[in-house]
Length: 254
Image (cartoon, rainbow, N blue to C red; front, side, top):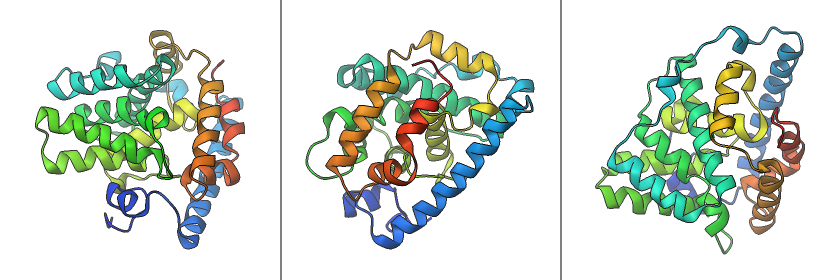
């Protein structure tokens, strides 16, 4: 992965402000098509009671966030910046991403994943101007990283996970933190890959971190972001990804 030219990396987002060139947009639309196919197959597996999550098990202890200076600083920053609806989304994103990592047997730095999950949407409430909101989220994460003395490499991993997470079809080639952050957020926002998770994992996350009308809140916030950055990935997801419908159809009550 070329950090300077790959869509969604922190370097790319700094350079472009998150605005897509036509060729980049075409590639992401192709990725969206693959996501739609996988989502359709997964939802059908649930209806046919063939979904893999029925027989899966994730030990709850593996989903408990680590306690460290980084995770405490990230939690403090997120609590100060985010309304409860988005803060709880961050906690669930970590849970779901970590659970998919367990099932995929992906080794991940849990501290970085937790920090990324808690901070990835801070830009939705703080961003201004015409740059992708994740650039603001990455700056918040950078401040947290500097506060606890995180290494340059770890800081870049944290920030790129955040700036990349809402690209369609983030793969493991982007690194475990980016891959699982995107996957966890996808479960919570649109129900993508939810069929791979045990019902207990889904239910426990929602019980411990209630959704509080998350669908309504996030739909409006995403529409604002799409309007603010017309050439960005949020607009692409709304236009080509039926994102509003995907949020509405996620397998959660609210």
